[in-house]
Length: 447
Ligand code: NDP
Ligand code: 2IT
Image 1: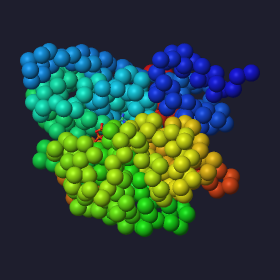
Image 2: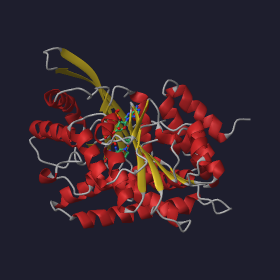
Image 3: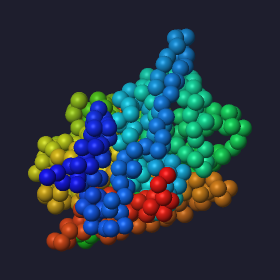
Image 4: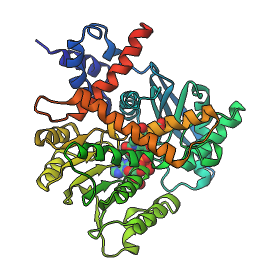
């Protein structure tokens, strides 16, 4: 006879068979949450999880725009409004050529649990486009963002759905998107987060995902009486999340030895210090260059093309680039090299098989929906400041972020502690995230 989990996954597969990333995210949640549902009468028999895997609304639209050579380009835009039981839909926009419904549905599904964990009243959503920002001029980016918002604006609002950044969407894109929303709605509201400081943005939002990830790693290490200080840390990615994760590791006395992008990774045995990181920030955020250019300034470092950095010996690994960038063999290599802690800055960077390796070795492992929640949590704090028409200081926001990461860690302990004391942060995060949303859905009836 089929188990509850298999029977559930059969239904989800039948409906979403061609969406591997979405199925991967659902499977991970189902395996940990269904056993909990079965043991708790208030959730059992209500098809709660089946309701949660079906987006409340899935919007797909044409984005046509004119490039610098006068050619008309056509991209596909999306917004997945996954779940609004505990607040307005909230989640980033991703601009990357790989974007499709499967990737955005996995991200939107994860976002529902993540946002629930933040303790703030935010539902889950995600959106984006298969538009590739690489190599585009600022004017092309602006025209694309304006065209994208000329459709998206009718589906969002400060009390309905509040998008933000993700891969390929940073401060520049949020500015262009906000400008067009404001023009079309004739309204200055906090409809997007990640805004510039002079027009409604929050201090610490740019840093929040990376900082929050390291705060979470710190909490995990504390359970072992350990800390970041003196640790060698391997970071993947070199975008927003990777840069600020690296910065916080440096603040806490750790040594960062790698960064990467989709072309490969750099290994700097001497450590990427504050000056070197500042060079990387200018290289990636202003010049929009490639991480391999690090060697032009720091020739003692190595560049390894077309590889991820998981073969580099480290104590702590922070995957901060993209989904499925850390596989089973990488996980085995990390363990063999003595890695004691993996804290995900990206969304679903570790494959299911890699997570199984971490769990078997009983090392500290945090899934992105817990450890990278500091970004969206600080977006929530930006929404609060917008509603209050007020601005908190850097210290105020940073302290709230620290408290939220600590609360998320506590929730993981509440639901994730095994009999032998090992903390399964995957189970902890999934159940804690589920309970709050499920309770709200039950209270609101079948809608
Ligand atoms: P950025 O666009 O700033 O940076 C992305 C980085 O990841 C770049 O170095 C990029 O390299 C690399 N990358 C992207 N796609 C791939 C790929 N297919 N293969 C290898 N490398 C890749 O994005 P963020 O830093 O904002 O996002 C990174 C991760 O963190 C994503 O998983 C995102 O969903 C997640 N996240 C982001 C949050 C935020 O607030 N920004 C919040 C929570 C999670 P290249 O330049 O070569 O493309
Ligand atoms: O994956 C994520 O949590 C984000 N990209 C941030 C979302 C947000 O609304 O700040």
